[in-house]
Image (cartoon, rainbow, N blue to C red; front, top):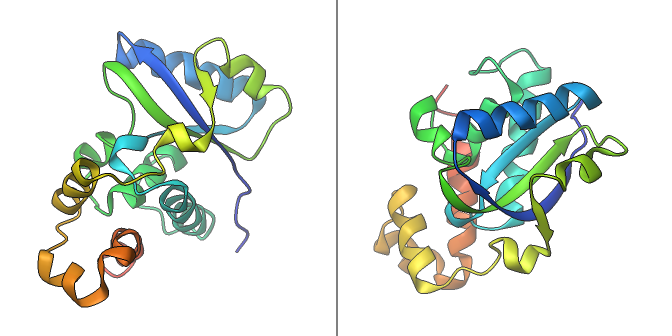
Length: 173
């Protein structure tokens, strides 16, 4: 079973029409024979969360055990820690201002330049690494992390509780 290599970038962009924006992304992906996955940075516990979702999605995709019909949706399912596509799609783009992680799997020379027509690339620090109290509360709600769980492992390991939810999707198959 081979994992698919990916490059991950932080980006910001504005979406007026989800379907039209995603069609432009698909056109670029097809042109470069790659997969481009957009993750909502505000719903993720940082780059580690993206890497874990991609690792699990690529493993299930290449192993023939995928839940979804595309690698892109498979990665969003793992990012959300759910088997429900409707829930997972909320971990992608949304109308308005988006702070995002852009994953290109496998990396393709020139794809970043083409994506720059649609997004503004930023450093990871601006892409959602910090978990402030508001984001922590949102993540606790999204991933059903209880105060009791946090008390057991400690606040400094909150990110690990989110990553555990990503890994648990394999158990719930």
